[in-house]
Length: 154
Length: 259
Image 1 (cartoon, rainbow over the protein chains, first blue to last red):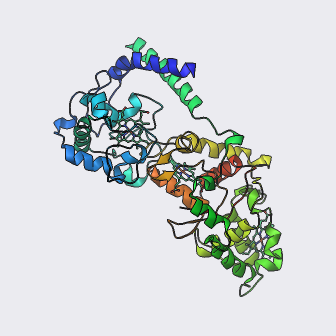
Image 2: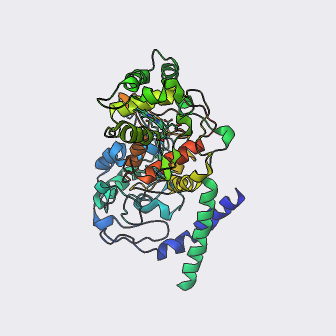
């Protein structure tokens, strides 16, 4: 337990340098720059659409609600493996949310949250999904646009 | 630059170490059957033989058990009453001397079809194969699972364990991430459970029928967008073997009912 806490302090202290030097992994995907714990600029310069983003977040195919809950009263089935998405836009900047979606494992190597914009370094991916990220650059931007609107913590 | 990389590397080592601590295996005293996560209605359905829809498969199995092939002998001609199979299913997958590798119960039944009845093997997930394995499994109801006692199985169990611990698929999740670390949580609406295969083949309400452990495992693999193992892949038997040995001592519940 002690070592775990120490590891996470260590992690946040070194996160900036670690991320600054981390290479972009998949060559087919648009490159992006990680600065500190964020990706400040939109992927491919896309403009996000918050209502399209909400539709992605609640759609079972895109998996968010398998783990998360949030202010989605119409959704009967929501997971409890992860913090509620309510208020997440007040806790994190747009750039931080973008990195969290693109590759959460850079923030916490042990996280169970999938990397939504990554296509390499994965094992035994099924044929239907091989070589593809879970979300496109445009979809990442849509979800980021939506998450930033979640300011209310309930 | 080089120094930075060294820092990152040692940092990664720390993370890797702590994630090992996190992925704790379930202590024997904390193990729970999947049934204990189900609604009272589903549990009642499982426990009442007249309400358990899996029992229809067991009845089908009894018919098949005594059915004589055109040439050759019925299962019953060699094995006697189905009750002679008491204590068999709780030892599977088991080491096969002739093949020199573990075989699961479905494969064992098909070995008898081919070697002893001169019949073609039954297809994976076919009604007849599920019925026969449900019948054989039912004979051990309430008995403790013993799989893995044979030391020749250890290397295969270890491989299954490695597969259970390895992240895979587009969602990059290992079985252990859900079934060891988060078994008390819900994935969307579903209880995750500890993945003890105590009741296979199970009657799953979602399937509206019986399904084997392999079908269940393929469901979880496809869930994390992994290329599933084929039914006769050695990796599939190794995973079944690890799961059964992980459930050693727990009571067999075949045919169980799952949502």
